[in-house]
Image 1 (spheres, each protein chain N blue to C red):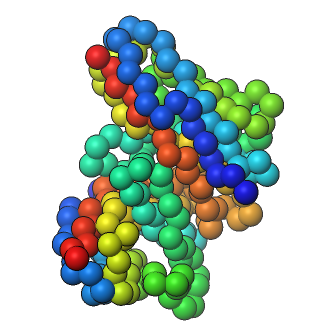
Image 2 (cartoon, chains in turn yellow, blue):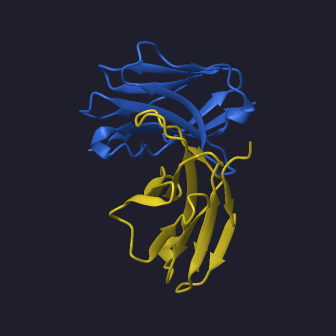
Length: 116
Length: 115
């Protein structure tokens, strides 16, 4: 059983460039989440998918951020025109939903983005 | 108001001792779930333990147990017989209906186990 994998592990980019991250969830999981985490903080919810449908996006999420999960399997998160404030760890998680309150998320190791 | 409060930014504990990591929460929803995750320096969040608001008994998973005091709205994590590999960030999180069941996270506690 492979876990959640994210690619790349690290990304360094210049301000204004576009970046794309990929997440491969655990194969039978129907939900996929994207979070952002800065140093010394807990993860901040960005968006999530149930199968291929994007069900919720954070109100704090800039229009420069877009996520897709075209076939209900892997997902991509794109950030356009990156800013220095986008520097963070981007975490992906997946789950197999049973009941809403005890849903257990399995996380990948994250993509560390540095915007210069 | 903070939904999840972890009051200990950092803790040092001697190896083999037990350690308690504090977590208090705020919700008016009668149905909610509480989670603890561990984040080593590698970055991956690792699920440790879950407690449902209606669970009659405190959750346990191996060396981890959750001291659930519902009236006080606290859900402290207890790690027995600490090991060097327990050194990591520990996050408390809650899922509730009012937040559309999205996980709400605390700021974390950095635990360092001393040999």
